[in-house]
Length: 164
Image (cartoon, helix red, strand yellow):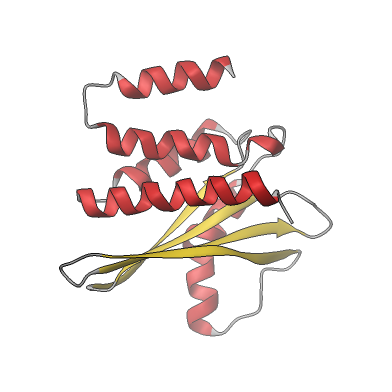
């Protein structure tokens, strides 16, 4: 818990806006139940790149893994824009805790979807740094607020339901 407090304090005092830093903080909490599990680089790449190729090409699921849907959310703004975040948990066959979470983030006014990996808490610094960079690329207050809302709902879901 001390690590999380120190991380939280350092995120708050970077001198930049708090929204994106708070997004990263939420990520640290989600998979803390599996603190000794790690998301591998192969799993990270599958979530951020391979899943999209699989869906667009009609390919089979990655061998040795399964995806489980997690409740998704949609926020509709008065300007007519809707923002969706669809969450899925990536499980290695035979495991009870997910290896990582997939967030498919999209806007109704932009056909491009973002595929974001939320790694296991115990994952390498390289994996977490890649996630931080991806989250930092979310532009605009609406998008950042929507992502933060989605991550808060995800944390709430896991606190009530636990993994698979």
